[in-house]
Length: 154
Ligand SMILES: [Zn+2]
Image (cartoon, rainbow, N blue to C red; front, side):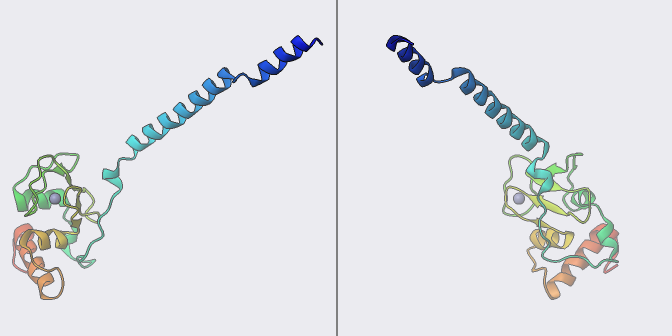
């Protein structure tokens, strides 16, 4: 091989492999795309669950009431299938629906705007600004029963 040929050979090795770079970039774009698609399939809105501060007893009839029904009765709101409504809690001027009433009573509700949520008892606690602990728990439960079951202390 002539010295000239060797130079060309080494030059070829030094040159970046554009095709490999382009392929790696495509693979990265695919991964990014897949991540974005996966993120839209698992919206945070359906995975977040607010831990209840106070929960209704397991045999309590109030526990069977789906949060959308409770929202409709307590706030006079029409809850769409998505469960998202403008937050009805005091102190939150919600311009876009960021509060979700889950269809499953065990999941309760969650507001992404003011970060409040939990069980029906927690909803009552925020609504009436009563502590959900001690005597407050029974006060909230009694008000919920009157509103949702139509009888005092039911
Ligand atoms: Zn809110």
